[in-house]
Image 1: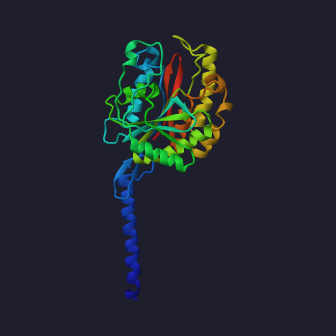
Image 2: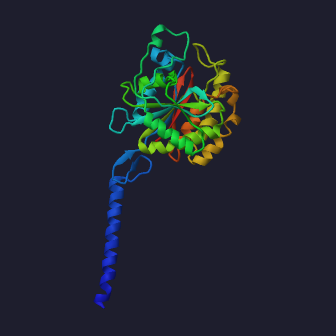
Image 3: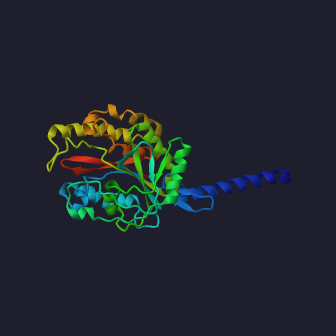
Amino acid sequence: MAGQRFPTIVSVFAIVTFMGIITSLFFRRGISTVSEMTLTNGTKVPLAPAICVSHGGGPMPILGEPSHKNMVKSWENRVRKLLKVGTPEAPKAIILVTAHWSTQRPTISSGAKHELYYDYYNFPPETYKIKYDAPGSPSIAKEIYTRLQKAGLSPKLDETRGWDHGVFIPMKLIVPDESIPIVQMSVLESEDPEEHYRIGQVLSELRKENIAILGSGFATFHNMRLFPRGSNFPPDLASKLREWSGVLNEAVLTEDANERLAKLKRWREFPHAYTMHPQHGAEHFLPLIVTAGAGGSSKGALYGDEFRGTDMFSFYWE
């Protein structure tokens, strides 16, 4: 009888030992699909964040314009920390979706180096001498192109188009040492929310390779006709902004990725949507939709920067 029971005892012992090892590894090492990926060779790669920021008015953040001080503070602290700038876990590249480049097809800057495109007017001469010499990344641009093409999104590579101020103004303050390669991407003239979300979903896979996604726009409000000049938002407009932001923020932070898309597809039905972003003028909202798509199943969060008496919101997924 003892000889018959011995294999059973050994089997039970082996199973208990194996489960103990797995449990120990789980609690000691913190297995996570959110903050890091483990490759087959055991190397851990951080999961890069997806972040959407407000990039301010032209070069005013760099000029020290007072209404932009909170925005600048967030770039230099919150966003820099989210990106782990200056640490071994900093992104190996940033894909930056800019509101200031609208094209018919998803277009990707693919040069090893890009000049700056000073797409603002009537500012002091020194603002046209700003430099930002971070490298591009032709290899990552090609990878984005291939992934978008497989998804049926008809991408295009562009080696020559300069980096606009939606890129170099925030990046000069977020990564001042120019150490992280940047690939600039356009938004679409169609303003189709579902297509922008799909682009983000494709880019989301690159987060697993420690490539960050950064949307650069002005999602809370961008209506130049109603923009206050040197003063706070008037009370009636500020009230509309709060109502709009409440609905928008809830939609963006919806945890289920498919439900998030369902809500954002109907963003034009949100309260005061056409006041915040005029008809055919959604380009500063669209980087948020791409970033929300790139957020995937990560839990989103937001922060607000006080700007002329109200909050401008930025969103991120870690």
